[in-house]
Length: 354
Image (cartoon, rainbow, N blue to C red; front, side, top):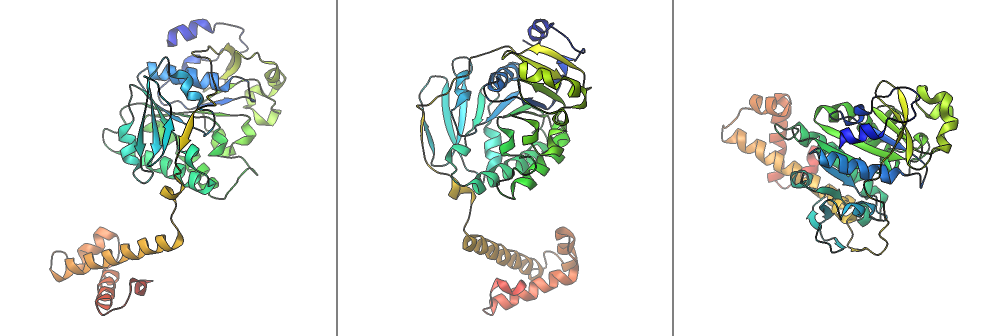
């Protein structure tokens, strides 16, 4: 499939970009283009391409028209929905499974390399805080998961349309929590590469993405768009007037060395919008807790920690010094924890430890 793609793209060349760069292991690619420029066509093609290469493909649903279902006639699809939620859609190549947003390692274990895996979460969120909290946890735990022995061997291709929802540019934040998520993604793109995770993302314009993040992609595909010279890699500064005029089936490809070529973007399937797919359920409550519940959970954790330390010391299973080494504390702090537990037994609350 890759060889065919390379043969098809011996077209008009501005500079000799290495198309193969985009298919190198764990290479991150950003697709840029205005609405209706063919970004989704490219994403669907790349999903099929990397699926054909044997990578585990994971698609982030954006909560709109289920355009990933355009692949359903060609490739089996496994959709993951939050607990208690459901997509009302029937097809021999379609199945869905539930996951709990607080147990993401189980979700990652369930990804199937023989299917296109779609995480359908935003469709079931009404609160932007819940969505940002979920995806922040998703990226943090995906990195931890892939760090584990053997978990990072299978190549994983993560496809994210409307990437600015997760990593908005300057002045485009909806809530402050989006900035830490943007920074985490940008800072850890190299680490994701190390653990065999490929990121394919799309956006309408580079300005819509957090600057430190957009600059860390390896390759770029520019569909028809309206950038100014400050919004493209330096190699394209003198060619920005070409970008609005690109035909729908062509783009400017920029490789890792910032060489570029004008190439054709083939269509694996024609993108469709599925207007009549119904869903049920909400997931906000699965990722957010009321302040009182959070405080109750913290209090319970404190009391359990106190009980464990007291038990280990009273039964002479570990010394204060040994416990301190395990918990990275000093011995006096451990003894203070034990004294605090004694106060608990006398009727005081876990709030005694502050």
